[in-house]
Length: 298
Image (cartoon, rainbow, N blue to C red; front, side, top):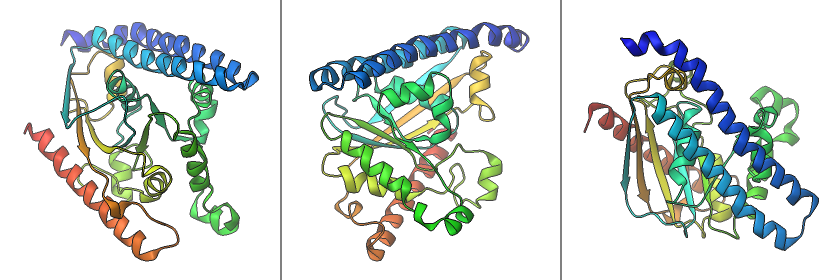
């Protein structure tokens, strides 16, 4: 009861500290990113990239420290399998909140290589976030509606070309590529409008994963199937966290092998496309069952 009363005060104190954390580490990343842009010398590029990734991980660690400071939160990490900073990983995760991004960055620190997100193009204008992501060479994806593509068919496949271009940059050093397979955050309204066959997930979008695997499949050591849950704060996890109401966070990680049938020509081979979609849907069915079990406390 006391925390409910204090929630507005906690929000007023907590939010500026989180923004200051973002501004500090994001600012450092942007500054060094501009140095890399102005001085495109291979030795400088190699020296600054790890430092900028370190700043990203520091942002995640400091953000989580603030979350722990203001919330009586239990952080429940569950990892089935071995992890290494020397491997390449493709993370497929559900998406519930902007808080997911902080958690995945923090989880990566000292466990796996620094993550690269596929971001919506609109986020390039978000203060500190957009330019920092640009400096870290994260790809920005522009999505087009079906009506727009019908009017401008030459724009079809632009996202895939962007995926291919950026994935080439990730081949030279162990990297973690993160894909929110649903393409957007889960909400009950979206769940209903998309007529999702899953209880806790939106239908997966297979194209982005398919082309990431087609471009880097031989490099990826494993897929990390990550399920994120906020069992006691399902409606607005980010707001609950900022107000000191976050009780429990579950990060469930399943290390799985990449099947040979998951790599192929998704857009030109109809048989492969059907098989790949079946594989992704099966992965999503298993994830949905896993989330149901986690919510029940199994």
